[in-house]
Amino acid sequence: MTRTASIAALIAASLTTAPIAFASDLTVNVEGIAQAQGSIMLGLFDEATYNGDGAVNGANLKVDGDSVSVTFEGLEPGEYAVRLYHDLNDDGEMNTNPFGMPTEPFAFSNDAKGRFGPAKWDAAKFSLSADGTTHTIKMN
Amino acid sequence: MDLSRRHFMEAGLGASLAGAVGVGFGLPASAETQNMPAWHLGYQNAPAGGFEPTPMKLVFGKAPSDLKGSLYRNGPSQLNYGDEYASHWFDGDGMIHRIAIEDGQAVHQARFVETRKRREEQAAQTFLAPGFGTLGDESYAVESPDDTNAANTSVLVVNGELLALWEAGSAFSMDAETLETKGPKTWRDDLKGMPFLAHPKVEPDGRVWNLAVGGPRVGIYRIGANGALEDFGMVNIGRAAYIHDWTMSERHLIILVQPWINETFIPPVVAGFEWQPQHGLQMLIVDKDDFSNQRWVQAPPRMFYHTGSAWEESDGTIKFDAAFYKEPVLGVDGGTAEIRGEWSGEYATEEGVLTLVEIPPQGDAKLIETALIGEFPQVDPRYRGKHRNLVALASGASTTRPGSTALAVHNWTSGESQSFEFGHSRMVEEFLFVPKQGGQSDLDSWLVGPVLNIKSGVREICVFDAAHVSDGPVCIWQADYAWPLGFHGTWA
Image (cartoon, rainbow over all chains, first blue to last red):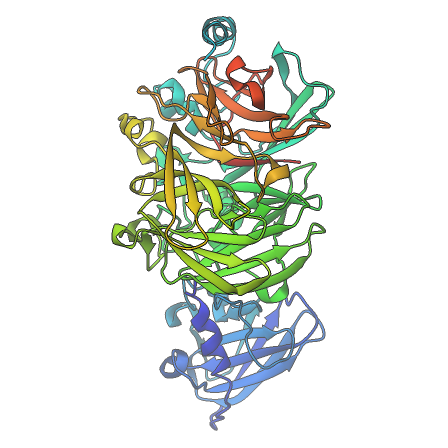
């Protein structure tokens, strides 16, 4: 019953920003947010950081409607993935029930889903081209 | 057993309808079910759209005038897609039945619980979700226990809200009139997705107690008669025992830690069980007013699914009844053969034994076995947690088919048992106590429950007088169709 508990830990630990100056811009749209409150806590990862503690970049996005958007500028073109959760009560943590299951909504890029754990890198990764990329994640 | 009554049941009632109503009537007959034995009707899929409200016909006796309410029941009702069969009885999608009884009339209706598992498997017309006996399809995402929730085990009505119960995920809220699915029940925001066992204990005043089991960690729900969560606490039971049911007295919760251990609980769950009889059956007794006030009690090793209810004597001795097995049953093969229409007769030697557990104020528990075999023990809801006389069981066994053949009642006060043997033609399920109007004890109760008439291929709802079970049914309503075997119900 604790199989997805690690999702909370991984996302929560990931939101340290480490901007690197490169040419490409990535816009991430998050749509289908059920509750207009709190913040979307979003972490951007490359393959090296996806299963670790640090993110390539991140954003805390105030929610006042059913969507939010963020643009990361100057990224190196390549493969990335997003993990996010909706911090409904703005306590800065991904809340869990007593058995460690997330009680706040979460999502991954490509709308990837996990199976007894977070979505795998191969399912969540997408390409950021040199011309820039817009990636949309639908919460549900 | 009343032979003349049984003769009627077997020859009269059955034969008169056998010609008119073929086996499989009401269920979608398919090529792969046509060569099945008659009893396999209990394992065939219910219609995907459920059953619209349909009056049942009173075919025997006179309906009690004071019997008014609804029998809600739940059970796995999708056990195959074509020639692909479920790996375990516990993995079929739950269907909620309502038999509304009033003014001598009984009306049946039913709907599947629309879980995610149900929706996606219906769309794909194949099994996808992992489960108790099922590995599941690798492509099926599982991000919470409710992604595998079959909502197929029992029902609870609290403050008018109907809930479909499973044991490893949330209860599902249903419309008590239309049986439409509303969605998973969250008792409190921080408890979203917590398991809610299929055997909540309801005090006579309507307060509900239940457990959330996650390996050795067990959560305790206390829910008011108004449906609001009053308290939630955690206790540790030391090892990852399989907990399907538990019991409760007026002052204590009694958590039975049977030596049937599953450390992983990874689908297929059944593959992770280990019988460790060296631990015996241990019981954690928890004070309802202070969850930290606990006591452990030791008993000889037993496996169980179901308890009746507990009570406390004036000297502090706790007593409860349960159907105990000497070693694990059902979990291992989960009725896999029966789902496919195969029957070896092995269950005839593996019946549960109605057992009284006596827990003295100090020292080990004592087990007192009766001569009664059976399952689905039930007590009068007015006496849950309190001293009472009766426990009812689906009893009897057949050498030619799975399932019970009789309804039995044991009186702990007199030490006497009564039973009514339906014979091979009826598969007997759980019977519930319904208090008679103005009754003074649990002897003043009706027993209401379903049987599957495999001779005529139809369903029947039977009513007995709890004090005179061996006299046979007081009345029987019959549907002109069948629905699959189920697990548990409630009366509301």
